[in-house]
Length: 297
Ligand SMILES: Cc1cc2nc3c(=O)[nH]c(=O)nc-3n(C[C@H](O)[C@H](O)[C@H](O)COP(=O)(O)OP(=O)(O)OC[C@H]3O[C@@H](n4cnc5c(N)ncnc54)[C@H](O)[C@@H]3O)c2cc1C
Image (cartoon, rainbow, N blue to C red):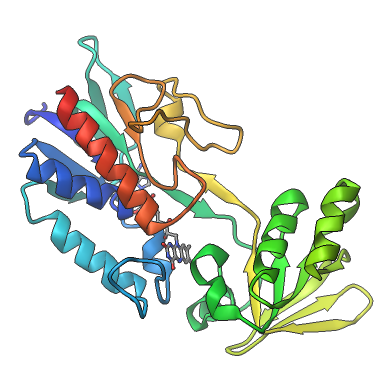
């Protein structure tokens, strides 16, 4: 049995979903947000680029503040995981989350993405200590003048290495055997940026509280102040693509200028829909999507 027909079901409670909850609540829309508690924000030792926090703010604290804000205006926040999303005969959406069934006129998918992590002993404490970082757009500024390794394949790894070198770092690109798959002009970019390429497979990577040690085949060990894994993201797009929404090969959902997917009434905001993975960006997109949803109902 459905309790009621919602104006909007928000799936995901990170930067995008919680922002949408604020807007929909303040538009006095009947909205429920369901989140399973896996926001990337919870993993950030100190979030940067968040406007209003010039010294940064710990991710868990920011998330808690966002949740308090999101719950203030009437949107119901629920803990749970939406396992299925379907279209009803009447053109609405029906979602299943455990024993819960919800029917909604529109859905905002704010399910985010997950980093592909390298298998490295000591990764979690090193991330907490800031020795391993995932987002040079966020915190490249904090690495200035360091010895930095970027671990990633092909164009993705190369571009991140060049980006990180822009902060006056001594950068080594750990290319995982992919250097020779790239065209000469791309390799020339590396040379101009002063990036060293190490194409031998790391045999072991160990993280300490202050440095990262990379042991190469042949026994040589390299030492870095910071390691950026750049192995890509898995976008949580499955609920949308099962309904026929178009996505790029990497799972990033296609959206229009109002953040509506190719399925009418199904919106997407945040990391699941863009590649500038930032809290401000996710929040801004969700504000646009929530307003478009309000205006169409
Ligand atoms: C280590 C690290 C450091 C970072 N540092 C910064 C920084 O300094 N500054 C910055 O701006 N950005 C930073 N980011 C990026 C930032 O965290 C993301 O861009 C932002 O969280 C995206 O918001 P989102 O709402 O799209 O996704 P998320 O915040 O990840 O939220 C998505 C939510 O949806 C939930 N979900 C997924 N599927 C379902 C489902 N089926 N049912 C219910 N819930 C579901 C997830 O579990 C999660 O809780 C960092 C990321 C990482 C990993």
